[in-house]
Amino acid sequence: MRTKQIHHISNPEEFKQQLLLWSQQFDAVVWLDSNNYRHHQLQYDAILAVDEFTSIQIDYENAFDKLKEYQKITNDWIFGYLTYDLKNDVEALSSANFDGLGFPDLYFFQPQKLFLLKGNSLEIHYLKMVDDEFEADLKAIQKCHLEHYRRQNIFCLKVASETSRKVSDLPIKIHLRIHKDEYFEKVNTMLNHIHRGDIYEANFCQEFYADETQINPLETYNKLNRISKPPFATFFKMNDKYLLSASPERYIKKEGQTITSQPIKGTAKRSENADEDAKLKAALERDIKERSENVMIVDLVRNDLSKTAINGSVKVKELCKVYTFNQVHQMISTIQSKVSSDISPIDILKTTFPMGSMTGAPKISAMKIIEELEETKRGLYSGAVGYFTPEGDFDFNVVIRSILYNETNQYVSYSVGGAITAKSDPLKEYEECLIKAKAMREVLEN
Image (cartoon, rainbow, N blue to C red; front, top):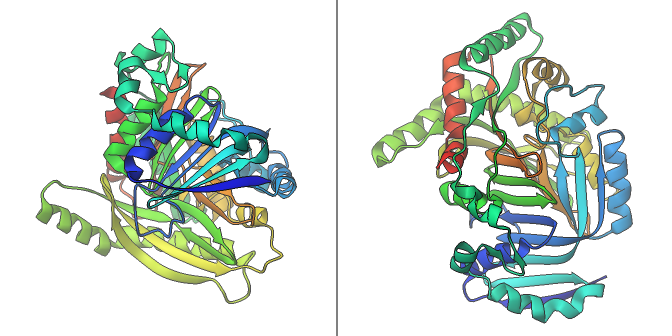
């Protein structure tokens, strides 16, 4: 079905930028960049999938069953996303909050052209119907240069309009969907639920947005990625809808019979002073509240993985390990399981979705309370972007630390959240949200 070529790349970092520039001519783009992060068992340094051949774009009703059929029929690489609102397919839930973005609940596509970069080795996988374009595409990619793009705003083979050349210079006014006093009230309501025993923990999120706003998606993504350099960075384009993500978190990965989930719970700010930064990291490692948040989600993930796992195979490989990123220190746990070869990869997703780090425990009760208290439909935020291989393996991130953009509606959005537990202080939770939002706000307002 696909023709494969392997090429040596002398300067991978430069080539990555050229590849991303070249991709802008297509209506369907998924770009995944590890930023050379070495701790998360990433199979490739960067992946680009472009040029939709087939696709599936649906709402939540029977979404996982339809995805299972599509994945089985294509039996190929497919790339796309799962929105948080697929919870309504998994459980008897609903999503009635405001949605300014309008992303479909689920979208995957089979790319005609696929690039897999690892070190200095580039694998190119083209569908046979376009494999005569290898040479011309490589030449075009190598002609793409960032300075040329900045001077003329040419998306390589496609000239952008005068309007889009200037949009990055327009001021952007960020609004809060939930203001500070209202945030405190809502957190206290959630704490009442916890004290009554309705839930142990819930992830409560708030949206920051700008309407009647235009941005340059590629420049915005590049700025966000330079600030954060996370292991699960994503540039996603579906016609007029964009995801610009600096996610540090893996949702779930399947490699052969091994399933790996790596939830993040626990955040501390960074300091430019090395001694102070080390103290902040050490304090997070010792923080009883943060560790308890993480352990609760680990228990939830263990339970989710057990639904498809071989008996006795669910193991916690790493508990509450603190990793350092450009913007923050994060507490991450790693849970693994083994599955039999006859388990559908879609069933593994369905029985673990939405991810525990973005819901709470017990999961269904937490999701109901979240829907009542939040003001915005989450959509792709706190969903997942990733891919399936022809062998049925997959890897998906968690969509956090991300900017979402509907170009037609001129609507820009980013959301942040935190885990509310019995020991939560509303002011500290609010301050943690501002720390998480810092990179997105800087990128948009500057």
